[in-house]
Image 1: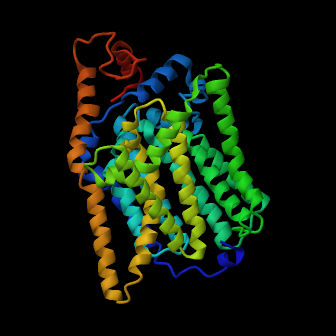
Image 2: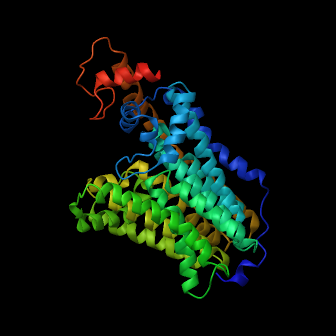
Image 3: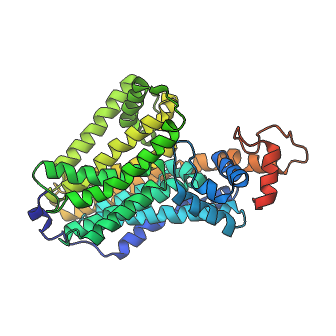
Length: 439
């Protein structure tokens, strides 16, 4: 994308109102399965946060590391909801859905900002809003870190896009804003390190190709990258350097396997359903992913190539960071539901752009409109329908059973049937429930 490309007028966009409407379906799972969502309770890593607050003190906990995660921004938000809600877990659920809706809205805003059609925007928004694979992100408060990070990713993208598309340039103050948004994302979630990195990579690629996105590209690119690098170095030192732990190093072979599986299985393994993981399947899905991304790039109009490249970089970086951080886990976990949110965020728009260009070959506008409506309705139903199967099951195992264990008259003090976390026994969990009024 060249500077001259960015000066071309944007395609006539549809009313802003429809982006707001496009974000509303994000609340549908909550409204539809309200009873199930009201049953969820603290579990696993959430108990680790409660225990650490209690044992270390609040501010020590905020600025401490949790595994390979350094996320004080998330901890400040999470603890604020904990204290303001007087321990109510359902308040976490409500906030999660509000943040989910915000992500869907911001995605639609970004796509509309680039002049994409109503079909691309609504297709992308409704896939993100309704996918049943988001259940693990939306029912577990610790996963709010994901939603915070993706919100800052989209805010950063929108801000940078506005400066580029409207030829505003990048002043020192705008570079400072870029650095701040990049830093907030990096301090919200471990994979928030990708936010500024993907922006930098996009700027750098077009700059090196002598087709810069904007004249003064190096300053905003570095402004996006430096906060991510700083947080990454701090995390690497704290997790590896300070302890001197090397274990088996980075386990290059296992990391490579996981990276291959991430690029292959996500997102179609979960979306197609009923598939069994095998090497043959990964080859087929990798070819499918490559075809979508390459064709998306080829079919994207000149201006849009920068946006598609950004999504591709984020997809690749997401797989790499997951591989580095989770190479010790089974390959079967690569396609887990919690990993689908970020993948769909960058994949759905590329698929939508590709489908939109193919539909554009139909010259009869009425037929094209009917097909667009049918495709959006079909894909929305397809990604949503399995909520019916999974919502009652998840609420039982991650809600009802935990609440029953916590309210039992006789407990085994050394068991972990309440927290389901090795570091917090049932006796400690009961103490935390009383202290923080968890309900």
